[in-house]
Amino acid sequence: MAILNGTELKVYSSGTTNLVAFAQNCTLNVNHSPREITNKESAGFKEILEGLRDFSIDVDGAYAWTNAAGAALTNGADDVLQTNILANRLQVDFIFGDTASSHDVSYAGKGYITSMSMTGGTEDTATYSMSIEGTGVLAQTVQ
Image 1 (cartoon, rainbow, N blue to C red):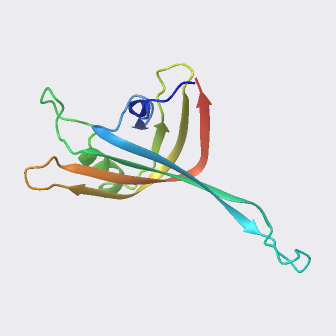
Image 2: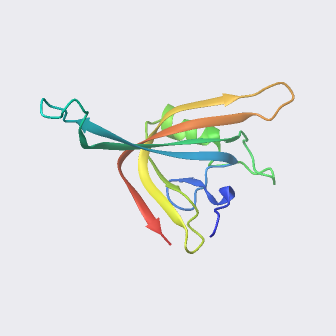
Image 3: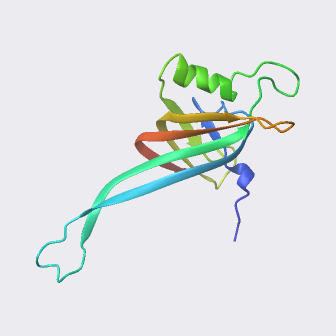
């Protein structure tokens, strides 16, 4: 049995080559909200059928403006904030998973960044966290 290394789960924005910079944790949330169909013939038991599905992604990581070589980032937290929330309210394309390895599963979809925060403690690493709410279909791909 193969156990997935959590480092292989990555969130990309705007295609498969733009990895969200310095991300340390990511979570894919998938929900199903069934609809209730209980009626007088249900013998006092709740009955449900399929309903709407939705998904979201939460990402957090180290907040940085430059890479290790000192070059400016184009995919850092401040870039994502400026491009997708402040200047425009742009939809993001994302892939959750590792697209480079064979026999891996990834999930792709579109969404909007619904919240973003930056935190910095005294003499501590500055961090960011963001939530992306999905719109449309969440597609699974097996490599």
